[in-house]
Image (cartoon, rainbow, N blue to C red; front, side, top):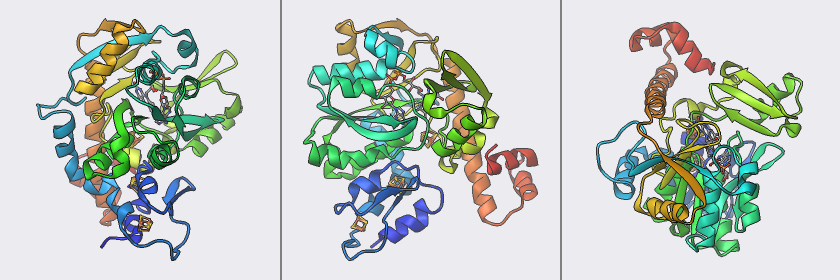
Length: 370
Ligand SMILES: Cc1cc2nc3c(=O)[nH]c(=O)nc-3n(C[C@H](O)[C@H](O)[C@H](O)COP(=O)(O)OP(=O)(O)OC[C@H]3O[C@@H](n4cnc5c(N)ncnc54)[C@H](O)[C@@H]3O)c2cc1C
Ligand code: SF4
Ligand code: SF4
Ligand code: SF4
């Protein structure tokens, strides 16, 4: 039977781990903790019963199942680079409090508030912050939901809060908001039949090109003479933007590239393809959100919010730029995975380049994360 040690050897110590937090939540004895940016069982204790639940909870080991999970939850049709969907709209909130706190169109926060008010959910797993360091949190009230608005950059094991949400807070209708990797993890836990995961009734995914290690990011920001704790907002477009004291400082993406964790370099999901609803800024004007509604449940909640007059929406023809970036992420992720594999097999950069028909410079960029 596979053990915690196998999880460590195959996933957490190899850089494959996306730090979703599922193994932490799955361990019935809470032996796995989030330590130095990784899930870790502090030391072998007599309490760890070697049950293999943590190993079984890791979706990375079962990527072969993702297609099947998508078929059962979203559908089986011919897929585009952004995944399968029912409807795409551009939207923004009408809620003035949310407008002040949100990242883009405030649709994630407004959806959570509507879902809570209408009884569709009784709480949500969200990402709050300590300074700008992201924190996995449970939100059960309007105030807690609004407080979690805005994007934080940094790996965050948000699925780890599922056990506390169900066991300590007694929640049974949970919405999980997360990056595409968090959503894949939750869908996998539901598919595996982990009892805790049956409490998840709705998933909202965020578009995601890449993420950054928070400590590395804070260092880059500090080197620019800014105190990250005094920053008002961070966002990523074609540049990494820092808003502080009414001013905007834009860094070329290459300056933060070294902060991108290994697992993001091989990731192929931009548009949260397994979420009920996926939301991002790309494809919309400033202050608006692009919303991809994928499932019947997603449609029901989104339409309910629309009918209540909580948001403004506009139809959008074709989101060519979003499709293009999603397609490029797939290609890049696949190629980088190959590069890592060949490197691990002992090939030199030149040999890898020749084998894949690409330049040595590109191989260097992918391996060195620049
Ligand atoms: C790491 C990261 C990378 C992103 N990359 C892109 C991109 O390349 N292109 C693009 O169009 N959009 C990207 N987004 C999404 C974008 O920044 C907004 O989150 C999205 O447009 C929703 O805006 P909103 O105003 O509706 O959200 P809000 O109403 O402000 O709500 C934001 C929600 O995001 C959650 N959240 C915040 N930080 C995190 C985190 N680190 N992990 C998981 N959940 C989090 C909060 O819990 C909150 O509920 C990214 C987001 C993150 C966190
Ligand atoms: S008790 Fe089971 S789930 Fe927890 S760490 Fe040990 S093997 Fe993993
Ligand atoms: S379940 Fe998530 S956090 Fe745990 S090892 Fe797998 S990817 Fe990492
Ligand atoms: S790039 Fe992929 S692995 Fe990295 S945070 Fe985004 S969805 Fe997760």
